[in-house]
Length: 445
Image 1 (cartoon, helix red, strand yellow):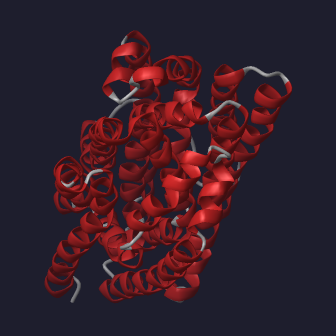
Image 2: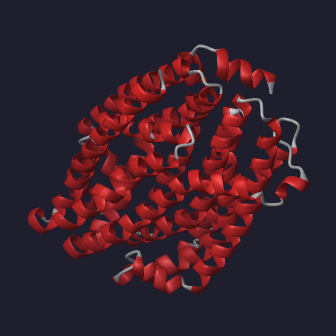
Image 3: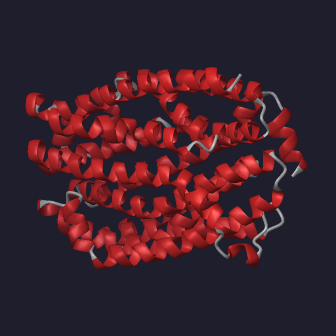
């Protein structure tokens, strides 16, 4: 653990953030490209209804697998602080408990998802002609969810160890697998939505197995000890408190998708849901550097907070916000200049191509300010402060966006949905700034 301590505790923050953020960004980029290519393939080779079907299914899949993400992020916060405080046994215990929790809970919820398949799809907006392709896709993808949950658990833990490149590899492998399998199953074998689902499920398996192999290898400093797989109440409680932020956030996103898909269908039918499917993929791709900065920020802030080095924590916050805001502004300018080109990449459906650019522009209006909100929420999570982390995480999707998506379309029609995104971003950022300034003055002196 010495090299990790030397790096996270002593290396220049700007250099350290780049070292952590670049691999995270590349991993997110490749994962986002995977989602985009997947959407392009199903849109071009199956049809616009296939885009709508995937838009409905994936929030359910990510809701189930977010259990692993929550356990991963909550546990990695404990691990980072434990390493900073030189409490290595606590780090091993936390890691073992993460594995048991993730596998047990994800398998349980896969059974629930299988049993209530039709009800879930209808709840999440599989209306009209969307239900049939969504059902076919959902049944296959569910089998890969435990692997995805394990991967989501393991990825932040790998970063907490100070191994961002391996975390990046873990995100690249499923992306390549999915693209190759999409070509084989959809284009070559003409397996339609079943083929798309099978390709996605196999990509999840590839990712989960790679991460499991990493933890078994000598490259990992966190060893899997059987005795630490037995759940420890104190560790489980702290992991759930911190990781619950992520699960609740994903739950809120899923609730948002229920409201959003229902509203989109009401004001624009299946086409509007497909348009949002494109916007959602663009958001994932366009914001990859900002999300990479946020992920790179977490282990640095957590380690130095555990080491009680307030000066380095404050410098990490400032550097992450400056870097992320600069990148977000460049992304914003690119979307303003090329909205039609972006829309045309995904589909040859003329109605989608004509409707998407306006929606894309409106949805991304507040992109330059989002880094502050993301880093602010991430700081409280890294510091082990579950309540403010939860509140700030829920600000955009839960507290502001869901009501706005419901209210604004009543006055502005479909444009009201797209306007909801920048308004929610700005309001959430303003409140995050207030919380962060108060925290710095009070506890980082």
